[in-house]
Amino acid sequence: MDDLILERYSRQLLVPGFDLETQERLAASRVLVVGCGGLGSPAAMYLAAMGVGRLTLVDHDVIELSNLPRQIGFTEVDVGRLKSEVLAERLRAMNTQIIIAHEPVSFDRSVAEALLSETDLVIDATDNHETRLLIDATTFAAKIPWVMASAMQMAGQVAAFSAQREEGCYHCLAPEPDVSVGGACARLGILGPVVGAVAMEEVLRGIAILTQGSPPRWGLIDILDFRFGERRSLHLTKRADCSNCGFTPSS
Ligand SMILES: [Zn+2]
Image (cartoon, rainbow, N blue to C red; front, side, top):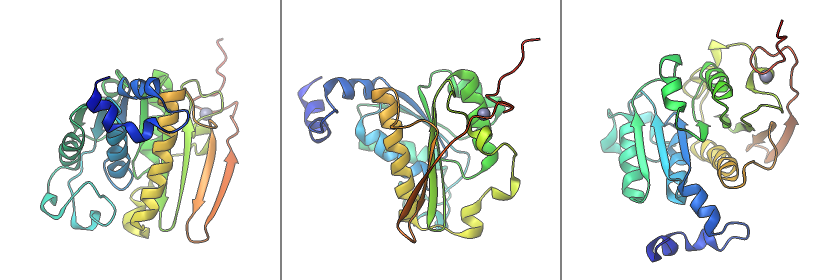
């Protein structure tokens, strides 16, 4: 590592448990961020700033004025432009030492395999249950861990799922596609700092997975309520009959 890299990351290298080897693991990591909105915008910015070596940003949407109070990678002049493209430009300006790719597409079955082929971790920054189910199924098939997060109004939740899903999976938690949940922020509202705080919880789990191999707990669903300042944790229960990770008889 050269002197400029040591200077750039000097403060995080002072944190107990975060050393040069940890930094090198981050630099060698490839992360797919699905969604560049309220979760994806701050999450990708912090992952890039910390030195994750390769980030791929996926989002088909364009920036709207109503995005600006929480999607802090964007400015007024960006309205009407592609979120993935603008965020990629911001990240490249923040950190020229890493590789940033962007794909202005929806994460669906037609692109999932190619996007996951050179990925160590997926950060879910989508706004709908159906895409989370697809991330869960495709990352399980590809043996890749992922971190789920969602937020609306004054609350959010976050959970990390391992490559092997021994703790269960997102399908065990919420098996059915619920089309009514999509776009909840547009219908029910969201405060920018709430989705930002949830994104940081997600980033911290992601960094732990990339540098230590696991978060504090796999399959622990943390529910954060910022209106009352409360945090609850639920343990996921693996379902034997789960359509995604459940036991399938061989005959
Ligand atoms: Zn399952």
